[in-house]
Length: 147
Image 1 (cartoon, rainbow, N blue to C red):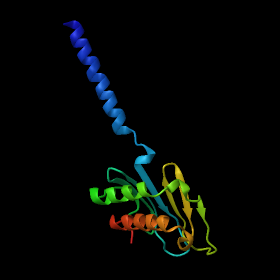
Image 2 (cartoon, rainbow, N blue to C red):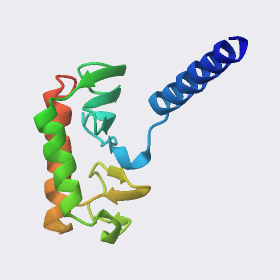
Image 3 (spheres, one colour):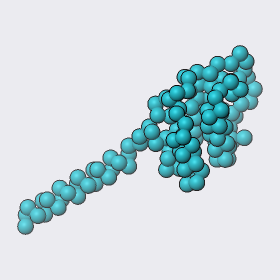
Image 4 (tube, helix red, strand yellow):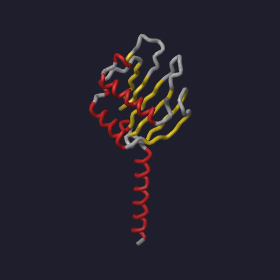
């Protein structure tokens, strides 16, 4: 009887630890990050990380409706659409930097699967990347934290 109780306690402990580990770890492949930098005008400066669960973290830095860190939950449909689109394009094939001759253009940085892409000129980027960037901008606006 002593052994059965000890075994039951051990199993509960192992299961609890395993469950806690799975909840606390987030795989970088399960999220996409989007950052918008400043311009000389009143461009919003923020960072948005969207997880495949729909949960997200918004950090308003400057010229946003809400400043600081805020949690937001996107709909399952919007989240699935975003991550299904990501599955159809090869983010790793995009260049790391898309430059611009325009000095005041705000930089956008998209990070997915440990790949960061800096965009300083939306006109010269591949169409798949443009769709992704525009989708992420629209999702950021839909939070109500960005104009």
